[in-house]
Length: 123
Image 1: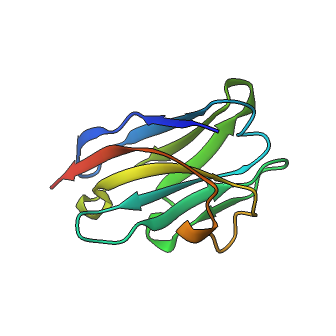
Image 2: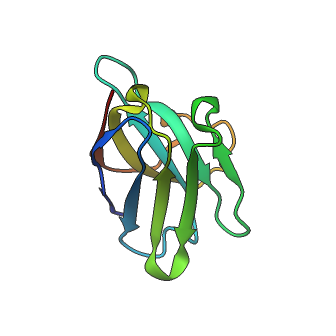
């Protein structure tokens, strides 16, 4: 399984950005897909996840109400729509896939990682 993330960039605080992750095969419809992020000097942290099948979505508290995860099975793509961005959202965002459910995900439970995409929010 290969995951290719894209869509990062520089945005002002309060702005929006959508990042995408394309999987190499029917991963999106068969795996739980997730986004993690890693800021400079910090550990990689969970951001959001969406289950396969009937979608269940999970968010870390700091992004609830601002971020929305979704998937398009036909395009084998998962998205993270980020609204009302804050400087503390600045990080490299990583796409991930796991056979586990979306609840209580941590990096040790991830089966596949994509390369990161940089998101920078200026104040």
